[in-house]
Length: 133
Image (cartoon, rainbow, N blue to C red; front, side):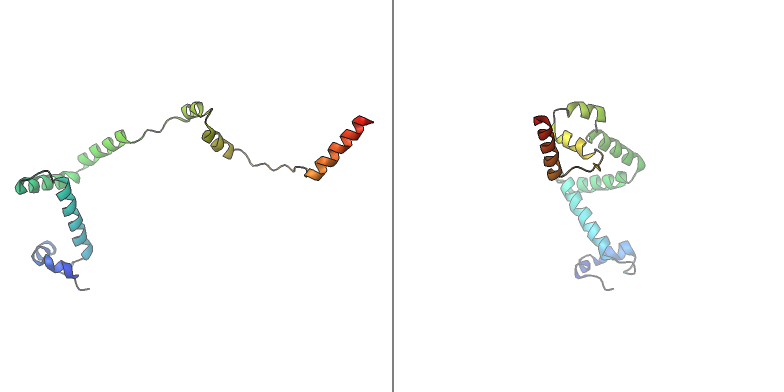
């Protein structure tokens, strides 16, 4: 498949990186563009271009290390919203209508046969006549 038109903007870098165009793919170039934009935004406060390059290389080098991923997962876990125990939630939801609705949705399904309104009115009229007699 021939390379896309915007890939010709970077022919020297592509030839060095891919050692030819045999394994050339547009997705790799798009990813490198996105990474470049992200680095530009992440280090936009740094005005010295050499320092910005050093910082971005250091960041890319440490981002893939297992120790850095462990630190990031620990930070993500500590910053995430904690789930409270169900007992505490039940105590707080005693007067909460939404909690009561959720609890009622978990009740068992009613399978009993209920009398129709006609049957109920007939039974009521019979009781009423029995009380009058």
